[in-house]
Amino acid sequence: MTDGFEVPIRADGDIVVARQKGRVLASRLGFSCSEVTLIATAISELARSILQYAGMGEIVVTHVDGAARPGLVIIARDKGPGITDLREALQEGYSTSGGLGLGLPGVRRLMDEFEVASEMGQGTTVTAKKWTRC
Image (cartoon, rainbow, N blue to C red; front, side):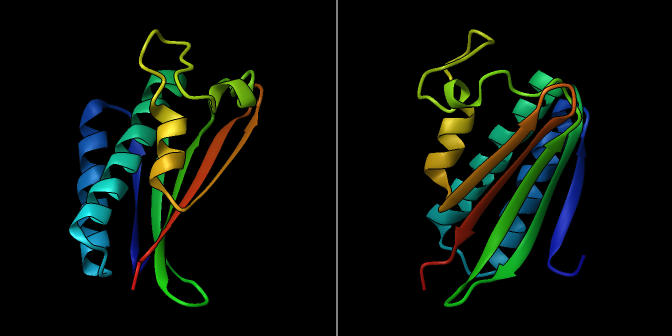
């Protein structure tokens, strides 16, 4: 991949690697400092969800040219059990792990576009996009 990267998520250290690579790519593409932080946070939340709920998966981040401006696409993919109730999982404060429930709803708030596809027993794919402001 020319403008992008892929990080297998299997341990906590992989979250750090994915987040840092996201920071570097977002900075290089001209995102503001605050946007870089939002992107890094989204990557971190998605990677943590992969570890917590599926045990392993991958984060793929690529540069994309939109109609008016460039952006980033983050794809978080796993082969875990899937999300039982997607609508419920996207509600603020919902958590099956006893956490704060900021994961998916938080990522949705941080990014400009957000989509989840999940199938029981097959896994989950989250696609999130962030566009530059200029």
